[in-house]
Image 1 (spheres, rainbow, N blue to C red):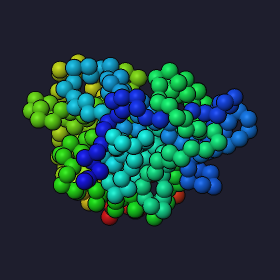
Image 2: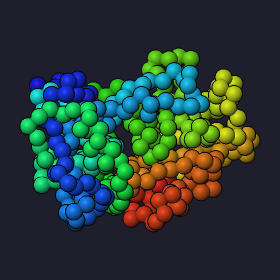
Image 3: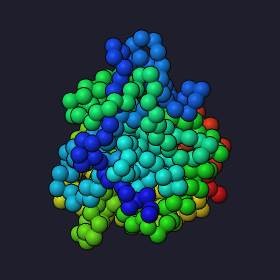
Length: 364
């Protein structure tokens, strides 16, 4: 039977075994990118241990909460409130298992589930190009012969929510990016994924890098924009997701979207960020860049460009992005590279060859 036949979104009964911390200690920090792939949790007695799954009653690696899918400005937006964290359904919780499991064949290595684990029990394995969940007990994470309870788990989660976290999930290079790129294309083209998959993926990536986002409800013929988003209830935006080659449709659709949002939601054009998210940037010869420039010159509207690879790199680096300016990710036919802008967001230079594989620069 297929893995997905066993999946449940969360525990419906508190029948899983409790995992607690050793008596008399509490976590003080989480460190990533050490000598090993998995995170290291430091404890108050000076000891260190690998993060280990605590069998969450409401596992954030599987589901978003309703509050996470609420926006201040777009309260009436007809959105798809799908709560699934993994858009490829790679992570699941078998009814008979004590913890979630990850299907390495379905995992696209994006890191979303890693960023959501409260105890850093999930990590990215670059050798296998998959996320891996660690459920092995150790001297600090102790498996108890009793069921999970709301009270004990709440106390444990509160302790972890107050400690600092440092480092990055994985360091980028040409090889690991190419493997992500290849795996993404392989998994994304499988017939089992719905037409909503691109929007679902981009919405979840945006949520993890600090952008509150909603995707439109499937089948809604009155509002066709793929995604709306906002930050701090002030700046808002509309996003078109194009993972194939229909690049020229994106800026034209965005103009329609902006008109609708200005008219129906009374949002000022000056407070709106139009955004196109693609798998890789259009080629330098594409008319897309010329259209982007024309729209800026005629309408004073700057359409920003972003790639799936850039969003994934933000997740890998545990970085957030603030779309607080119409210039932050704007490029056009005069300069079709986002490398300098993105490196300023990360605060460092990227370890990726220029032009490879189209995530930062247009391909010739």
